[in-house]
Length: 282
Length: 188
Image (cartoon, rainbow over all chains, first blue to last red; front, side, top):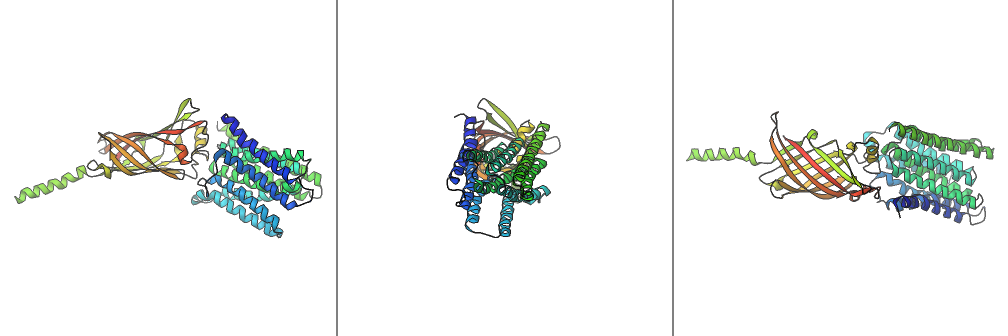
């Protein structure tokens, strides 16, 4: 197999197929049955796509990883565990948000640890906060948006982030983010095949995709040359989608359109800034 | 007799520094860390590191006591193409923000005939430390115009980048890196 075909097969086709197959599995049962289980399968679909892509492209990283940019591999696995715990144990909403805040802080600390000896820079802290906000925002977006729309939004968000990262000096981070986009793309196809079913799975998939993409953006900002504005626009799209879907909760169709629109706008703006900056740098 | 012994003692004391170990600081302006890697299996791409420092100790009387220590700033990688250098500094290769330096510290030095020395030591790169051996040849030694004393060595060794976790794009860039070390030191 030629190198290009290998990269496409391992980095795009495999994660898409894995995620799509997982969604088909999640939607086999009757609607309304075992919604929480379906959310876990949704989380596993994106996480599995990411883990498979990184394993096929780079091999299984050591634990703990020597290079911090491999932490998302383990975060993906951890996020499935979080989804499973949330499925088994009902918790007050505040506790769930608190857990996510703590997990976000821990993830940000692990990713930023090598550069913390030079002090926490303003944008590092901001990016870590945005990581948490995007997690909450895209989670809320998925709860109030039809499954296919959620998956399209996630694919666009991750795809734009992948492009921005690849244009900012790290093809590797771009490729890993592309695996998330491919996974979401596989979910879009599977959702269409299953005639739009999979809302519960979407609610499980969105937080995983949000965290993985946010972690890769944070890595791109700190360890590569992702422009701050590009990262902010991408993250703002995810947050805005959550806020709009919450504000317009009474108008379901309008909420879906507006939140998907702002997610797409933030994603396009982020990728465009990275492209412009890359072109300007020669 | 006493005078003769005293003269012998004084002579021996004076003679010792001439053969004792001498410590040198690497003169960055006149030292070079160069590398080459195969590109697409059709040509060699060349590059260098511009920022490094170190010391070496030369013991001509007992070469085994000689040592070398070098610290290289990974961010100073320079291949003559800003975009490529940005890529080399990224997590795809050196991840220079996390792994700011690579270091070499010798563990043994053996004479290898003539002016050559076989230097074995630990190379630490991207969180991985592995032993490497390089044969260094003394190019020359002598006084400089500013009253200092200098000596220089040059050698070449090959390493596999995948051994150090720098394994991205194996189909586009060769695994073997040929490194040329050309160091000039100023005696302390």
